[in-house]
Amino acid sequence: MQRHGWVLLSHECIVEQLRKLHAAAERAQRSDPEGFEGNANVELLRTLSQLILETVPTTPAREEYRQGNTLGPTCRHWRRAKIGRRFRLFFRCDSRSKTIVFATRIRICSTVDNCDLDRIALTLDRLS
Image (cartoon, rainbow, N blue to C red):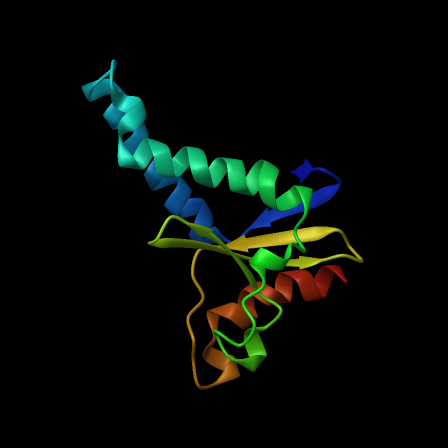
């Protein structure tokens, strides 16, 4: 998918979580057709969709997305968008290939071989 000139890719972990969230939002709508808009799952799905499809692709290099050494110096190229106080949307962007890869969580690990982060990052490295 392309938005604002960027190719958007999502790791399978975020695709699966979005499917579950969408199903929960549909259940909320069926159970309360009048007031489902205030359901936490509906609001989270709306916020994530806005971030993934509009906000991040508009300017992925925003200063507010940088996290410095929060996850360690090997993860500085990962960015995060905060969603309220509990959730974070992690992504990596490459300006040369105009590609953004989204992930929902990054697991810190002691060895590079076992790190989910590096497996996700390979997607961008192959595109560069």
